[in-house]
Structures are given as C-alpha cells and as structure tokens.
Length: 289
Image 1 (cartoon, rainbow, N blue to C red):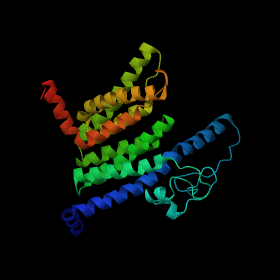
Image 2: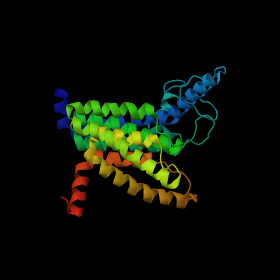
Image 3: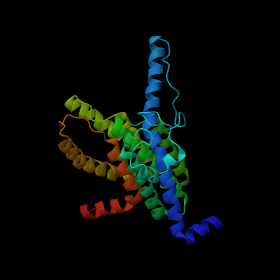
Image 4: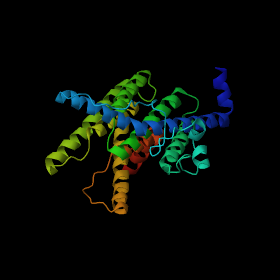
C-alpha cells in the first residue's frame, strides 16, 4: 500500500520506471521476434522427420535463453555492456563491436516503441491492475506485429495463451465483463473466418490466414465484443492506406501478399487505449449515438 501511495504521489518516478521497464522488455522482445520463428521451424522439421520415418535432424539447441545472443556474421557473443537498450546501439554506432557488420536499426526501433507504448499505458491507466495487464498485452502485440511482418506468421504459442489470459482476467471485470469477453472471442474468430471463406469462394484465393482469426478472437476476449467493429474498421482503413503505400514504394504487384496481423494489432491497441472514445465518436458522426 505504501508503494502504491508513493507511485501515485510521484508520477514522474512511476513513468520513468515504466520507461526503463519498456526498454528492457523491448530488448527481450527482439529476441522473441528473431528466435521464436526459428524455434517453430526446428519443431516442424522434427515433426516432418517423424512423420516420414526419417532420423531426427541434428539441430542446434535454440530457445529464448540459449544460446547467448551473438552476431549472426562473426558469432561474437554479445556482452552485457553491448546489450544495454538504446545506449549500446548508439555507442557502437549500430555496428558489431567485433567485426563491424551493421546491426539492424529495427532492434533500436522495437526498444523505443516498447518504451513509448509502456509510458502511454501507464499514463492512461495509472497505478492499477489494468496497467499491468495492458502492458503484458501490448508486449505480445508488438512481438506478433514484427513476427508477422517478417514471416507472415502469428504463432499459436502467443495468440492462444493470451486469448485464455484475456478471458481469465475478465472473470474479474478488468476490461469488460466475462459475458462480453466470451462473445468477443467467439465473434472475433467467426467474423474473419466468414470473411475468409466468402472471399475464397468468390475469388478462389486466400485473403488472410487463420492466425488473423485467432488474433481478433484474442482482442475480443480482452476488450469485449463491443470493440470488434472499431477494431475491424480501423485495421481495414489503416491496412488499405499503408498497404497501398507499401506496394507503391516497394514496386510490388497488387498480388503480393501483405500481412494483416500488424493492422489488427495496431487497431486493437488503439481500442485498448481509447476504445470507448472511438466508439462514441463513430456513433456521433453516424447519428446513432
């Protein structure tokens, strides 16, 4: 209780701590974004070998902890001082300390985005259980976004546990009541599932993946069914604008596949933060409010 009182009385200390937490988590999310798809690929190779009756392939041990982070070019093991969020990147001028190969600026981007989103959540919800839950959800959405951008993949190992976590938290009415949460999970999945199959029947093409269904179900479980229309509308609008811009700048054809998960994740985060205001604004401009 004294700790909560101190944080409430010293908001800058609270926000500063959350910023540092966000930077630290952002550094870990870079590991998740890079390694989780590789771990899944290793698992699939083992499963395929078993189904074919072949000897299991010899694969290097790989999880989120081992081996230690290293330069992919020279295998230089990253030391602690080389892994300080933001600071190490700036001191090393974005290059490996051993071989000088460039380090992707996206590592820095993920750390900064995670820290900024963390502070925004802390500012929005204050010292509360909602802040803790919203931070955890946001970290999952960031990881899903970048994995989908890289691999057009939304891992079940993230979407499904977080779907159940949303339902569990809303047993205690954290963001909505449990009835709205359950309906949100069901409606979130079935709405995109229906769109997918109608699109496939009409065009004989697949417009999205099953991971997108699970992601919208996750958001429905966390935020309730009433937020789903706003999430779908926002993700569609942002996807149309940014997707068209990306195709134009990258000179790709209209047939090139684009991941929809990042747009769902962005819309879900906006709904988490300002969903009621967004819904109220929509109702006011349509004359339904």
